[in-house]
Image 1 (tube, rainbow, N blue to C red):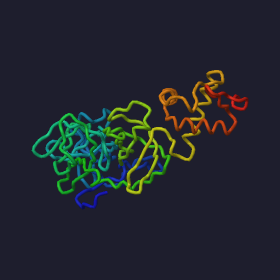
Image 2 (image 1 turned 90 degrees about the vertical axis):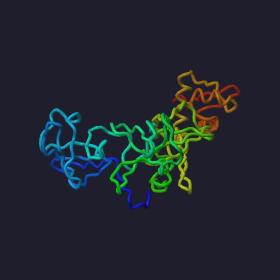
Image 3 (image 1 turned 135 degrees about the vertical axis):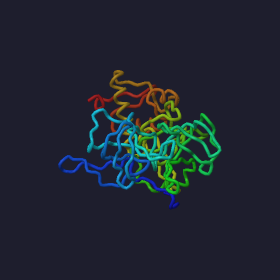
Image 4 (image 1 turned 180 degrees about the vertical axis):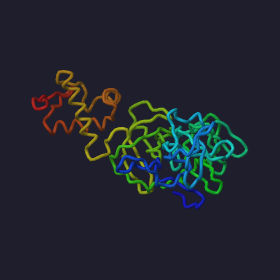
Length: 312
């Protein structure tokens, strides 16, 4: 992360502590702005409830977020941020991204201080001009990193991802399953958000389904570059044979469902292979080659056929 001492990044998405051995929820962590916290209810008032935010003092949870069965001394899971009057306030709503995370957000408006983006809370998030890689335009979506500027104690956003994200700070291995949010398309493919923490790329020639910016999909780590860039894919072909074995199983299932013969060979048009199995021709040929070597199929001029071994 950035070395700027004015910025604090939450290490985890949730600052909710675990239960103790007796099943009682006992908060031991400092309360954090821009993160989920488990806070104790101190007293109920006409406008809501005041919560014990420990190092941050007492914080109001407005009545519209107060559970009907809430009692004094009970614990609530809340997100802490600053309201429209720059007062610390709690909410039971969850934003699209928290401190230290990245999201694909829509610009609501642009003012003299920067652009405001919708991050899922009543108060829009400011992306100051100094934190914009390029000028942000209303009604467009951008990949935005959330951080806490401790000088002002304000939560703000940034599109200068390189300034805040250490792409080499992850613990991924090739083949790991990850959650992806599709970002902007470009000539070679799509920019993606990985597990809300990092950015990566899916190459267009490896995409075999319709993708829309903002869409959430499951992906897999394909390549970890020395410069910190991460390549991802939607099928686990980058792992040690895992993707090939999965595709081989799909081919066998298709053969058995169609009486033991499939009119697709390594000479079939890529579009036909993509339409049937949602993979590239190269991946299909590798999987077919593996099935042939295992004597599960024979390869004919017009297709592939199950052997007796393959039928069992």
